[in-house]
Length: 280
Image 1 (cartoon, rainbow, N blue to C red):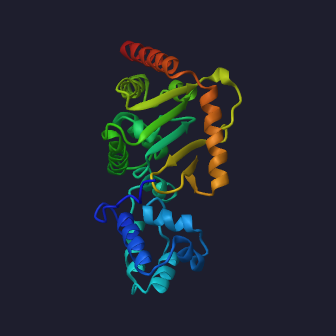
Image 2: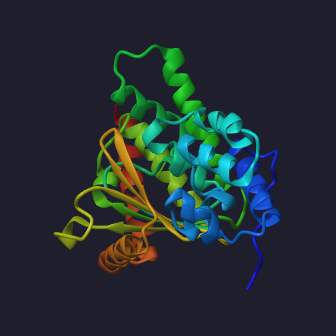
Image 3: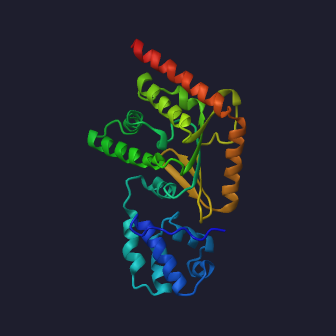
């Protein structure tokens, strides 16, 4: 069984705290369960803090400084974790996403953020904030495109998406923008960088009609599930809940078109959009 992943303390404030927490805990001769007890959290939660897949909260930092005798180190550095380019409800999930080895996502309405083109992302943010200045929209788009650089690695993370057919049919930004966005998805599929399936309207009722779902797996930390809502989100680590949402995803895959048929459908819709754009 592989040992704990070596975090680069300079890569992010979360990696710094995780690496330091592991060092201090081991120096104190405590197990993860031992350290979790005074914080009223599980040993696996301590492992998630050390692995960088969960964000340390201020009250936890205060207790860790007390138990480990770290003279306020965790409290002083915990504030850095509050700085994020993403909304509060998504910031922790976005940070965990960077450490995931496998990401499985069901998208009910929009192309997932990791797969969006600049024009598509701009249209999405403009719809969300119709009165925002261009500078605000530019910052949001830049953060989304930076996040998509996660796919610049040729193999990690493994990204498997199930797109509801509504994702293909809703012409975000108009037919030209949509055609480009769908061609970007098909390009990633043809490059064998992602796996994409389409859940067709003909599938009828399904297990995830309540909203979007993202599942993340890690080398040395328990898996997480992220539920996406309107201006809200929930990151879950409770094992029974994560297993339930893993089953939900498996059911979605079972009802979806095969990868080959999905690719053909996405390409067909992109061609229709492109043809209509040329006629405008």
